[in-house]
Image 1: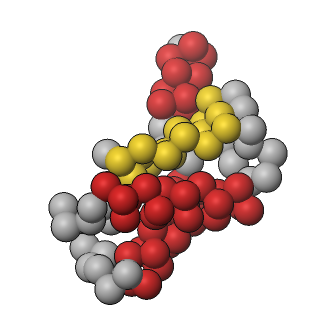
Image 2: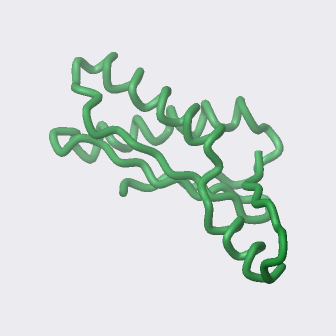
Image 3: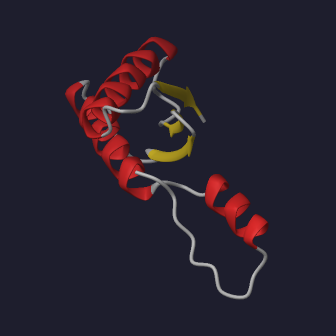
Length: 101
């Protein structure tokens, strides 16, 4: 998945920069779903779960927002689950960097 932007009379460079900075919603939705499932498996609330993904070349940067009650160890395990799910959706991505927002 890649971000897309429609260009009309705007500056092409500005449109490319906007696309590069935008969220890849299809991947964010998959990551959000996996994070919610991982929280539910741990008996934790899914309130406040959000994901923002940005693709750059062969890398995917993922910002994962989790409830405050989630410990660092739990967040690490959830990040691994999210990365695994994204790799299943987009196996050609060489690097998937998941960080807590």
